[in-house]
Image (cartoon, rainbow, N blue to C red):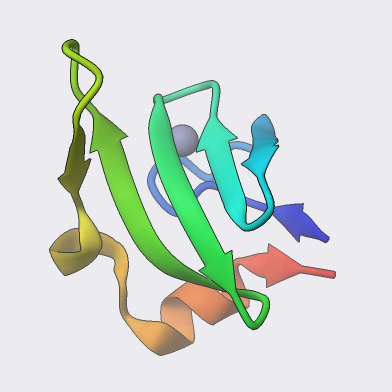
Length: 68
Ligand SMILES: [Zn+2]
């Protein structure tokens, strides 16, 4: 499965966990379920996660950005 970053459209997204992906271009973390991006987080400087779901989770647009 290939994940394209919903923020910057980069393909430079690495898998960091079972359903966790990380964009090396804009430093956001995504969790994926059922082949869709379920959550998007920004990693803060102190390592905490800040949810960006309000910005990015619109089911149709997010689903369209994931290519098998
Ligand atoms: Zn990105």
